[in-house]
Length: 140
Image (cartoon, rainbow, N blue to C red; front, side):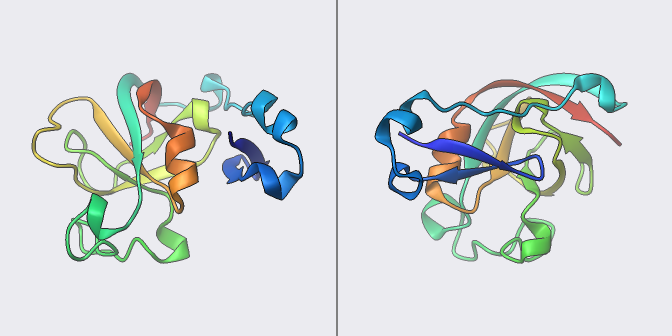
């Protein structure tokens, strides 16, 4: 079981051993959710999942996004992949905090429509995000 630790409104996942208590990890939940009213933009529900920049989940150049940027750089860790929005579009996923994400990557062609993949730095974080319908605010 994993626990979410909030660091400047961005969920960070810690293994139970890192926090010292399996029982605590089993009861933990995300403690911060952005207020939708804090942002202005179009509100759409997407099926949101997460991915890691590794060959098994991308292609043979996992750090290079579809727009050509290096998403393994810390400054680009706020990357999302979708086929529905143009590159550079900024979004917020309130259920994941008030992090502003930027569309830099694309998903496999079979994911046309309201699908969105969040770049996660670790498998634990990707598993925490899971796959579920979430409200997404398109800022521009």
